Length: 184
Image 1 (cartoon, rainbow, N blue to C red):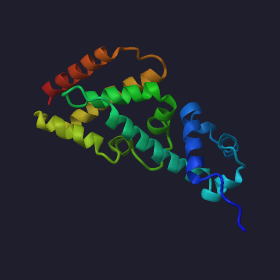
Image 2: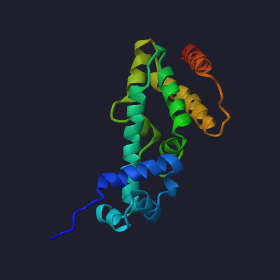
Image 3: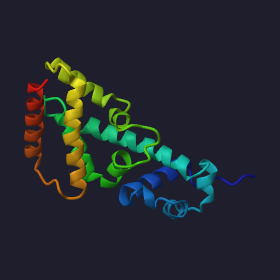
Image 4: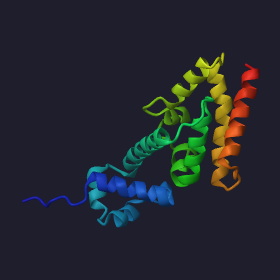
């Protein structure tokens, strides 16, 4: 009779997610993951060919996590890209290790930042369409201009160099959007 599997693929992935969230993905090794999951390395390599395969699946799970985070984030502002900016910056502040994994990593498993941000729900496409509906003649260029500020602010928050309050961030995002509109 075969032994009953006590550690599932989901258990392993959840343990890897916890570790990546707390310590960063570079600390997720087969041995440290096995210790976290409460098993040997054997169950890990039973369900994954190698750590790269696990890393890709974890990466996809973190993309879904960010999408859910954004979807649950309160949308209080009608100016395009403001809610996106607030959610992105707050995600970096609240989940710095996961932010680095998704948005500040050289290994994004063949996905661009745009692909990661847009996700399954078309987050960026919705913002671009909103800008177009509000009269922006080149909403894709507007996104790029806004994105440079948004991403920079989020990265600054990782190092403690971004300490603006939410109201100040909203004002800067709105002012930037309206200033860019005048140049388009």
